[in-house]
Length: 333
Image (cartoon, rainbow, N blue to C red; front, side):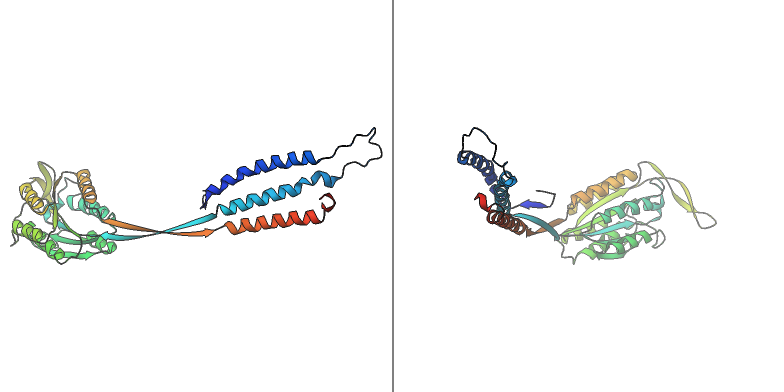
């Protein structure tokens, strides 16, 4: 590679350059043998050597340069232009099922569980440019916030708009999982995944979590479950103030880990426990690594040959040598 963008298709021809020093040696040996000698008593009356005789080797130099240019042309200098195109060969459809019950406003994660989740989930979505993602929210009931789509701007906007109070309070894990399955059951993707997050126990809804897990298994949908909340007590909403805002107090964190483990195990997924912001980020990063989309990359190479300029240079040098021989140096040939 020369200059960072020129390469040679046949660099083995550069070995021919070794002929040039041999040619130079042969030229000077031949020139020395052909030089006549004359013994005289005095040099007076003879003219000093002509300037032309001193620069006569210029013709040989031009020939060497021409040969060098031909060798470079034979090595085929060329520029390479590479263009790439990627194709998703195994895409993944993902539904994120998010608990939006009042307990998600607990402040054991900063600033609270729901806000921390939205921030981490946004980063996860941005790292999945080749997948389709949908959102399901649930509390005492559930609904589809965003159907699975490849338009990440729509998903991110919908995620940003998720707040508490859009649904009746409660934790209907079975409903959230069943709604997510309903969104994915017709998917033609190679891999279908649900990421279900909750911070409580199933206490609402008319679909049992085990039934929803069986549906996920039937449609070959892998489910990752995340239990969100610190161990012990957390500062959580315990009632309302006179102005309608929440009154906070310390409450025991109750997460049905056994249920979440069973759902994950039944569908081939994995259960995670997030006790703080850093752990939540690590969990989504691990899921991001576990669920890899297969990307096929095609590279297209376009070569532009540059040997023509060297051939023209060699021709010009040989023409110049020939013109000098039949004009300026004619009397010396």
